[in-house]
Image 1 (cartoon, rainbow, N blue to C red):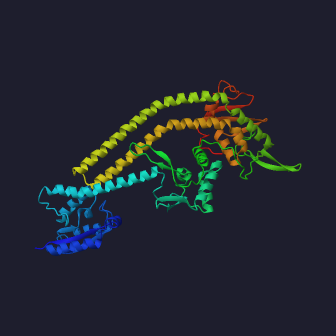
Image 2 (cartoon, helix red, strand yellow):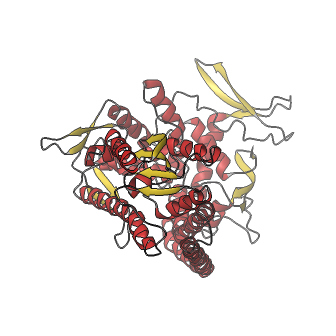
Image 3 (cartoon, helix red, strand yellow):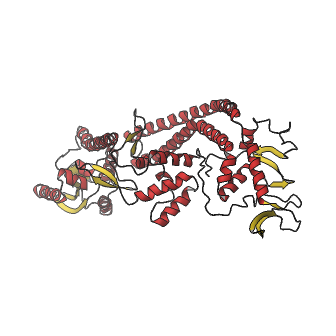
Length: 517
């Protein structure tokens, strides 16, 4: 009885370009083989997809055909085993499925008699060799890309602001395009520190620059715009920056100034009024000392000019000049300002506190390391089970995905632990510098920034009474810094003296390093 076969041909675009594979040539060879050996062709399927998995449109149809038409074919023929698959674990699983359907898979140019046990050795070689070739090719490509990166050559899709081109030696290079002017403009605006990231993005969008909300902050951190390329860490090679051969879009000075703004380490003093009325910055923060309601503010005309007042709108007739209250508020900020000679003591106290914190942090890092090793051991065990056919490829993929996710989360958490103490230290040092310059910053800021400063430092309403301020609490970051600065009028309970009638009890959060003015 003659045998019946389903013919399968496959070629990827790369293979056809590099190796001259042809679907037509494969099919003609399979038909000739069938004619010589008296094999009847039942069906023919051809794919133009990679063989890294069996998730190929035509192979899926082929398998469905065999499942629905049991007995109509007993052979699956292809030219070589690398046409069948380039993934050894999945190949063995698929051969098992075909065997259950009573289908024998054969490569006509690499035939095997599976009745002979030793043929399994050759099968493993035929199935593993294409996978090894793929891995080797991938390693060579990766090594070549890293070599190009070390030479300063961008060798992937051009980032925003650049186009992929070829230089005089026909090698890849990126050159600035029309988006470069928008990126340069975005950095210049961000450098002022006057605008949040999203406001800058929307401004650029209106001018014609298209960039998503999630990607724009990352774009502002890319060193490619200053003519550099970041090479990620790999094995024993640490992450590093190299000078690129492409043209920079912005200066390093502007780039790093923007990084300081993004991280909150820069308190920008070059603040220009954005046109908003700033004569009543305390409106919404002042409480009426007579009735306890919020004071509002307005302007009155008289003697050839306009004069601004804070006043109560409930008829209790509380009213005072805004210029007086605003000036006294700046004086209050000067009293809060820490003295220069306090800074060394402040830094020493911070280091002592962070040293205590380090003990606990190291224990957390050690615990995370232990969990990471457990997950890595489970992954190795999973690979062994797959190799011993104790689990299928589907189960392996699902479990590996779960373990990979857990491993990624653990590594990220560990990385956060490693850098957390330095970030906390940097933020608190920034808070000291911010408070030191606060009177100047406040005086030069726009009204919206002024109000953010007021709300950050004073979590409760302010009272202006008899030409002085009274308040219940200060923000705890301010308290942490100024509590060292004892000599400016606190009593033993931490309250301000009667002379200024200001309290210094506090609770944390407020002036954060991310605060931009």
